[in-house]
Image (cartoon, rainbow, N blue to C red; front, side, top):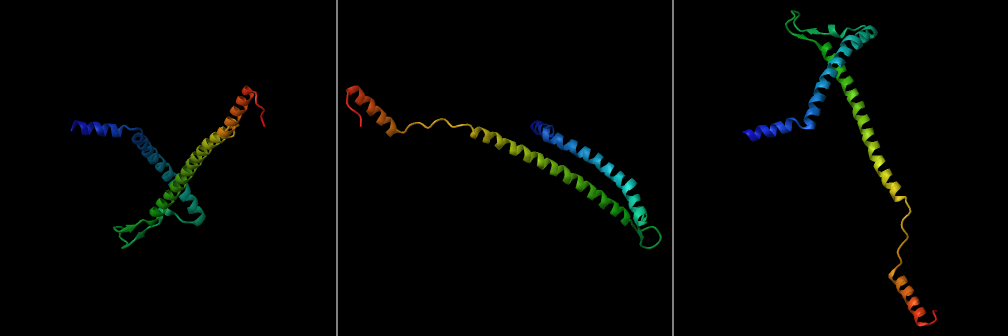
Length: 145
């Protein structure tokens, strides 16, 4: 049992787990901001333009207030979702662009190394043997062709 708790502790305190927890907390706070933005700014503006109050949009099925469908609140939730989805899309797009820029820099470094002049090619075996033959003939006093 002790080993189980040690494994759980190692899992819970990993960097990725802590990053995810922080992301969830910030996401919750951001969700509250978006809800406030929608409820306090966007809905009234749409209400002025369309002369519709989303908060008042509901359907009382029997007229006694016991079964009420508040579809205006649902429309507000959809607007919240669209705003959140758009912001997340922008964040992911920016992150992908940064990752792409980082990948392009690495090949550029490799290309600059490849552009450096290559060392002169080593002579082949035949060329070396021909040079040795010429030197031997010089040492023996023979004429070269």
